[in-house]
Image (cartoon, rainbow, N blue to C red; front, side):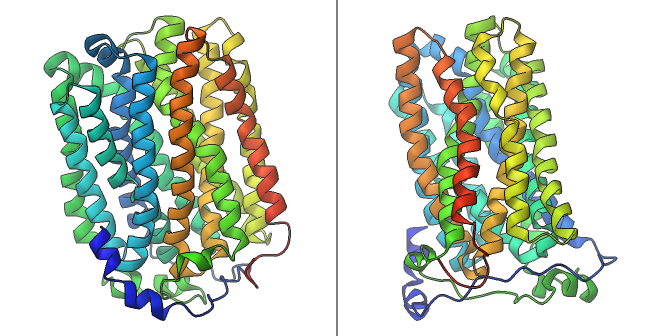
Length: 447
């Protein structure tokens, strides 16, 4: 990845001139065309995100098994998660730049191949150090998925549909988190936990075949009708030269996105990595008994992902400025996260599951709009790089959060109350701060 980026040094120097203004988002005037090939692209992005979360989620679901068999403490587990967060941050940063440099087709293909191999090698590990190595490799490769997907949405969808398309592919994270707890207990029962990692790692290979066959930028995609291409572009330029990293900081959209990622992504990773353990510790659920509650949580989260994107897309179609529509939608979804602060006070498992599910839906609906803000406020050549910067910031924060969670749980004897209080408060505060940053019209001048 580093060599690929290094090869872009001259191009970056050429792009050192003042960054172009971000796209101006005008109310759409064109009716949707008959063609629907852009939704094939959304389906491919949905599939890659699903596979990404299958490979990631297995580790959290196996936490009780691995901790019992290998003798891990909460601190050991938290430190392994922290290593993943650190390299995921680097993967986001470098992956975002790579997507702007070599394009989504090659970039996402390399990322999926990398994380598939990394997921498989988990099955060969037995020590904390070994799992840290495997998680580090997985995080570095998986960091490319979201920068690539957001750039692909920017290339393939007009502004009025971007939040919805983002919500659709982002729903893959929930599907991955649903499929894994349904299938993993049976795979582990039949083959053991080591082959489970190997099987999961093989899923990306089939996806790669489809990706290479069906993905290309719209102007070079022969399956795309001219009418649909005109609708996708709707007056916007097809591509722009990559801009320098430093110039990204001139845009208020970058600051809003980075802040939102910094405050919300570590909470989502907390849900992914610790909710199975919370259900086990608090309600005694084993891997088989956790299937129904985890499926329920991520099904509701899936609805939230699509709903959050639909709300802002509907507001844009009604004539509301795109950035304002994103903020309104994010505020609605942030309200769903507040009740999770009561999780530690409820006595019934399904009461706790409902509160966590509602918070997960809020996160996913907010994320669909958070990612889209970058497309709305930055030039096309800066989208993946900006996504990478935000993911890097979130990953670094997530590393420290993971280390803190493990130590808090060891120090308090497994009391999750403080953790869920922080999780519930993070989203409304994040939306309020983003609204302050974006309070002036966006789309004319940099920050």
